[in-house]
Image (cartoon, rainbow, N blue to C red; front, side):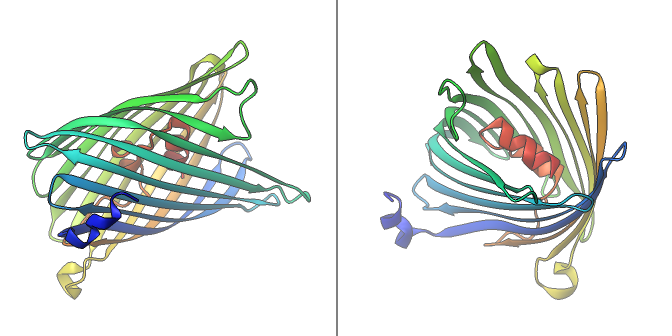
Length: 297
């Protein structure tokens, strides 16, 4: 709430919104599913070194061959101050909610709240951020332990047409003598190769090491910007992605085709689609389990 009085002095608001639809199948008879996503991010620049970021995500998963469905919500905000030398300090709060309709007469639900501090450096087209914080879950983990989250990301604007970035992160918690340690690594980028046309791609890997469980996701896509024919920055995108799940030597593949409708605003005319693997790799969640969900869906 402390940032609200400064809203009257805000000189610039930029952001991106993406509506997405996906259809996929799970190998070895795992069935098919459909997904609907809605993403939005915005940054308020108060032009005094203060930046206020806002984000929201909605995921709806509907399996074709089994009863029930799943709905996931994610809300986040961060407040950062950038010094004249490029150094950045700030803090963040992130909330995630997962609701599962089992189709068997009862529901399953849970939520988490992540919060912490961050710091980094911005110079020209390059940026770096590192963070540390914790995640509280409801219901609580056995023993009442919370996740410790920490990680770092980088982003580099190669030219006006190209950007790439990546992250490394980890979330740790203990349940009795069992460690729940999830690692995440990712790289992604986008390049505009012709007027109106862009290509994007990303790869991300999450590992729950003590359980010998890994998830590796990669995605490739193209987008077309209608700004060249309508004077309105509306991007259409198509992405093919695959997630390989490996649990103790048994594996399965999730193949997904994703469609997207992306609207940049506030002076932006193009962006990496928010429902893409590339975006999840370049801009992960502060909690690594939430990053896994973002990447896969």
